Every structure is written in structure tokens, then in C-alpha cells.
Length: 237
Image 1 (cartoon, rainbow, N blue to C red):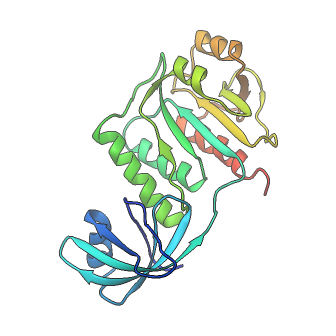
Image 2: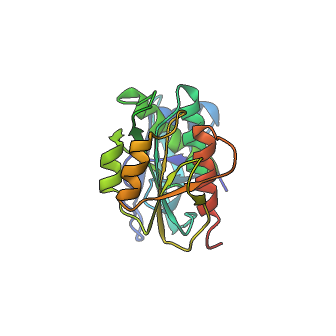
């Protein structure tokens, strides 16, 4: 696989020729100053649509790169199960690690949850940094669709508005051991360090969510989320 670069704007490909794309800001900097690329080099582009594009560098300036798009190939590296994770995010750099791992594991959507015991709710520039982390992880792991990161959502709203073939709430002291199920879509709620409150668990179960555990020990937030994503990433393979 050649070096991969992400285009913020959708790439409009014409099989007859003449298609072009442009890299700006951090992606242009990476190509020009980190990879030492230049005119005539061939790279792989993706725009989050599920396609990869072979492209040739035509022109460079200090801040952007213009490329000719030579071919387009649909490359699906998504897991067979569509996984949505609602997570009461941990503090600081642990959020970055979590986003990186979930992107690599093929999670489709991450929803930061506001719960009774939540300690961190990213917004504004914090969310932008996490979304940039999705791009960087996707470049590395070869995903051609980006994991979506929603705006923070109240736990009750997540319960009411999230639809999937199977809906699970992680609860270490109750419920059955989580297993892969053959469902095409799964939603999983992961609580904060103190866990979901008894009221929250009761509300989830009343709304049709299944209480499950991901092991006998008490897991950190990111460990539980990664364990959940890994379980369903393997499903159907």
C-alpha cells in the first residue's frame, strides 16, 4: 500500500479523465515536509466514501498540493457488524488512545455520553482533535470510511434514539457474559469509572437494553470499549 492521504472534500472522479484533488494544511504538510513528496509522486487518497484513489502529484505550493486522480477502487475494510458505542469518556490522553483503538477496530459511530458519574465531556476544539485522530488512525489502518464522533449526548437520549438489532449496556456486576450474536448492528453503552448508576441500568433495561459484562474484573472505560468492539469486529469473519 502506498502512502495514504485524506481529502476533506469529496473526490469527484471522472473515468474519462481530468479528475483532480487537493490536499491542504496538515495533509499537505505531511506529504511535502514529512514524506518529502514532490511532483510526479504517486499516492493513495481516500475521502471517507469507501473508495481509494490512485493519484499523481501535479503541483505543490507551501500550503497545498494539487493531484491528478488516475483511478478509483472501492475497497471495503469494514467489519460485517455495524457497531455504535456510547461511552462516558475518560479524561485527557486516554480519550485519544480510545479513539485510535476504536477506529482500528472498525467501530462505525462513537457517542460521548453524559451520565450521572461522567467526568469528561469533550466539545469544540476537543471534539475536533478527536475527529482528527480518527483520520490519522484511518490512514494507518487502511479504513476508507471514517468513524463518526457525535456531539456529547445525555444517556437517556442515547437510550431512546439509538436503534440496532441488539442493544447492550455494560454492567460488571449483573447480566450475562457478552457474546457475539450474528446481529448486523449492535449498540453498546459503556459507563464511566464509577459505572452506571442503578437508576440508569434500570432505565436501560426497561427500554429494552440487555445488561451484559465483558469479564469478571472491573475494566477501565477504554478497556471495556475495546473489548466490546473486538468481540463484534470478529463476528462473521
